[in-house]
Image (cartoon, rainbow, N blue to C red; front, side):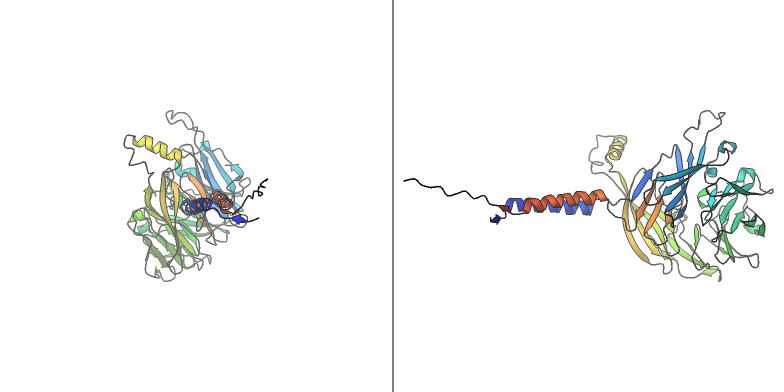
Length: 439
């Protein structure tokens, strides 16, 4: 049978293919997975990522039962360490604190006093109100040792981190630095901070606690954050002396060579430049590289090869925002959230740590209820720079780099394409038998 093309069906198929193409082009790119939480009731803080086993660990605090209007009532806070699958975002296990959290003072700075070792076999609980650090196996069930600091002043915060190999525990107060052997809990090194750099009653930024105390892989250099400033002090552990000061270098990261310190200062400091500091030469190793001309945004995360900055471009307002003037802003905000239209347009940039050059730049959309990914919430860039784990304040999400469109978008576009091909496919002509004329 003969097949014929029908112009009307072909035009309709072309329109459907155009709709599919526009949908794939305009459909917002989404994270691989995401889970949200209500910051008025609970909070998450990313502790570490185990890329080998594809897991990540979060510090969780539930304060939904706190009675703010009844200060005499003891608050019931729940502190846990939770383990999640990195590929799916589903919870694997949770472990409550080994001690009753209500015994500590109600202080939001105390919600993340846990540091994991690089091999995720041990953890350290910081108990500043008890002037001690408790070492546990991980998950935290068996206590290994307790380190006491008798000279700790009231209100002073302890800062703790592990060495890259996980065999040293780095601890500091406002005036001194202590280095312990993890296996024996014995003191190895003790260094005093020069008097001119001592600032008592530090601000105790809990999100910088772990990043503000670093040790090089060769165990020669120690870098600490100076309290109430954004300067870093560099110590030589061989000579046990301070050898340099890096100004405006918070939050820092040591590169794999253990001799170079990298930092992207927050934009709130009036800077948007990536800096590299040589620990051997006690000087900048190359000129700062400008990372943005924006005034909102900043450093998000980094690994040994790359670092990420996130910049707020502009809020993407819904189309009806300026047209429906008869609606109040509260009503329009509620409607926009219900429709999922009120988004923040964030430009994510991937930079090379060794050259300071831009490698990739791509936009992502996050809900207006979420925050901007900065160092204020601990984020994580995987070692191969293919994914990043972001905590935007009200949600934790795993993003591919560059971001990909969701599977639902591709399936819908594929369905529309198949319907268009079915419409455009030539149809068989129905033939009618010839009629016989009877004489």
